[in-house]
Length: 150
Image (tube, rainbow, N blue to C red; front, side):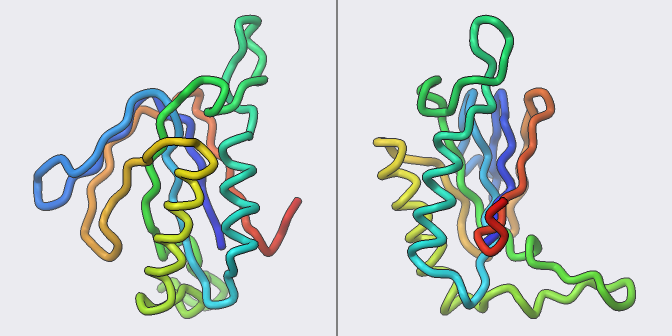
């Protein structure tokens, strides 16, 4: 499982020209699922994401997490995180899970994130054509892969 975490001042997700969800200061988390992902991958990623110290403390040092800040979180599925660009100019998405596998894992990710935060997270709609507007704060962007736990 791959995630991209973006520290945001705000994020808004639209579907068919209508606001579906939005958050203020917090994290936008894009999630890519592959067939080998497990509950352990989800627990590890969610735990790391909510405890990652990427918000500034009063001294201006990145020493606080979204939990410390009581920040908001938006979780959006994004199969393109598993794009392979090894051959040619058209990315291959063969490593990305098909919906019958990906949807339950994505939903489990959302539930685990809510458990870690202790509150509801904003989401998109799996497979929908979504438009996301955000103010990337910093910018601070972190990429994590549960198969490469650096």
